[in-house]
Length: 155
Image (cartoon, rainbow, N blue to C red; front, top):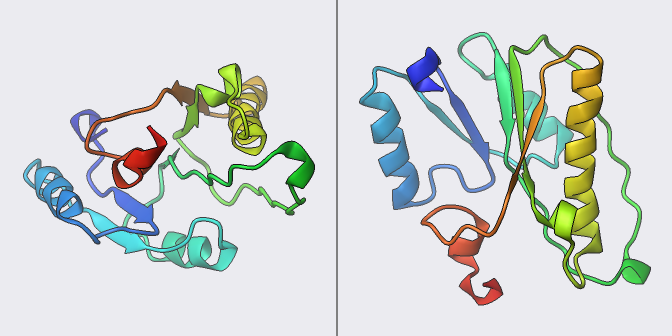
């Protein structure tokens, strides 16, 4: 993104700026002539997201959604939670990071798989309305990033 002109990225995460990998990431972005905000908030909390968006120092031009909720259980044990999606600004891009689990499925992960299937369907829905949105389905990543780095027992 930086190579394509982004100059003021904001990184919103429940663990932003909490590890050495975040410091390294921030230094790398800043070395490219950018200013980066590392915002520690809960993306599942609408008030936290609103505060984070309100604190963005430059015009919001796009969103890359990489958060995940992993609550493995059988479908019969799932509970319903309300969700709200509403457009608040005009985006140049909207990139959703989804999982191959939405395509392949996993035992005990029906909720996770269905959430990722929703992300894929939502991207198609937005694209069908002429709005920017792309969903990228990733497999397990053993690199030094993401949920599995902190939860090696799940590999």
